[in-house]
Image 1 (spheres, rainbow, N blue to C red):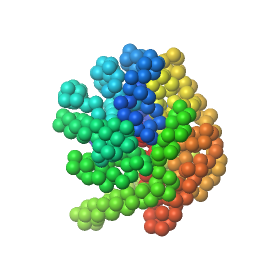
Image 2: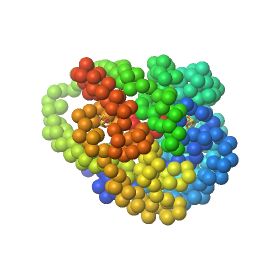
Image 3: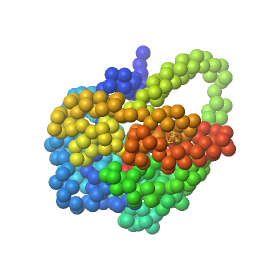
Image 4: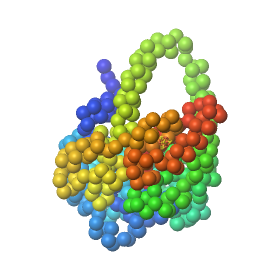
Length: 394
Ligand code: SF4
Ligand code: SF4
Ligand code: SF4
């Protein structure tokens, strides 16, 4: 029996979850960025000398990647800040790409030149994800402090697509760019791409909570925005589905119904298993994040629990992280909350919002209430964006 890549990777992910293998890694190579987005939770000035000194060297990242690969890592995300600000990025990427890993790059796209695109085209990553912060120079000026960013991002996007690189685009919606959403969808359509949406804007990870929170949508604004987007997607998907169904013979569908039921049951069991854990995701189970200054943490939004892979070696740090994740306390109020199907609460979001793993977060509570009201109103699924929370707002 042959397997498709989707089936094979699904089985590998499932296996790594069961065996707690560090299958998915994320390296945050720098916090420095040439943009200064108002909602960014990590960025530092591009020429900050102190930060540059504290960043881990290319040699250290490459050695860590070898150790992680030997421990089971197959998928690796390289992110920042802006990765192309590192003068040694080419060296890092070329070495990592020889290791047989599936690499994804997150970038703001502004630093992609014809030379960089053609270099990347020769050793293409599995995927490049570019975030669009607005649909005009004016919005880039307001959101990122750099009006040139818009045209430079558009240029970067085209250059990568010209090299046939697999590019995905997404946006982070805040007050300053909310009005651009429809235009962003049109831009995505013009490239034949879908537009992903990161809907959760976290406080800064370094504890400076002011800026990103001030810029993000209020719970009512966010729930209303989600409603608008989900109605649009819902209509499109329903139309697509009814087109597909009308093409199929009903006996063909019936012949697969048993398999579908079996698969669904397996999936439900798996999901139930994840959700009874203290992390409702694969953080600390088969995935890890390494911060620019060398801490291994469960995910991008967490600064604790942390272990130290550059000092202790990858395997020891991973073993310690897994143990520490098991000790992260569960918020009992959230566990028993009737709204949790509408809520993005998890150890990371609670900690970012309240400073504690066990305190319900007022912002999330209000958002969940708004989503439930909308869901009741339209009698349809309200948590359509929940999977978006694990996207970084990079
Ligand atoms: S959100 Fe991304 S592009 Fe914007 S400042 Fe932060 S790292 Fe840079
Ligand atoms: S954060 Fe609030 S709404 Fe969300 S699960 Fe916890 S108590 Fe419920
Ligand atoms: S934000 Fe929460 S759900 Fe997402 S990866 Fe982090 S811990 Fe998991």
